[in-house]
Image 1 (cartoon, rainbow, N blue to C red):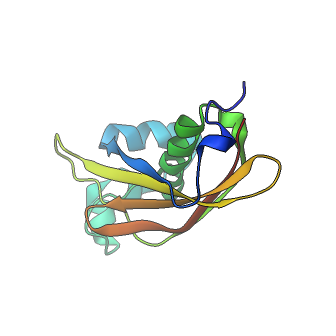
Image 2: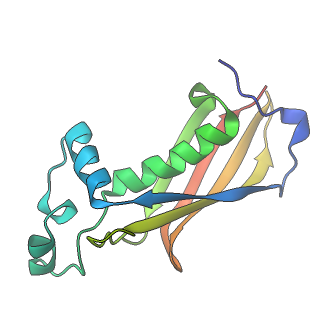
Length: 142
């Protein structure tokens, strides 16, 4: 596959509209199984509160994966992502109700590099809290 976004069609400062990713406890249990991270803070409300958390929280890597999903969906090809990194800045609290939590991810083209590559700056929030900082991806466009 190759990226469906064309290098010549993007400009520095171009915004990539936000996408909302809904997170429920079931998603965390499924992620725990896939990742092998069964830390109780990600599924056991009693334990999470006992260690001082407000409730069960999403895995940091689960949150990062949603930002990665945002980039690959935008590019049209998961293989187009050359580099991807974030810092974790806040927790995604996932209540045990029908609503769960929402991670909203948006982006902006920060730089056009040579060889049809672009740097995408990402913003990931839950409510008003920014959950990832210094989130960047380098994407190979067509």
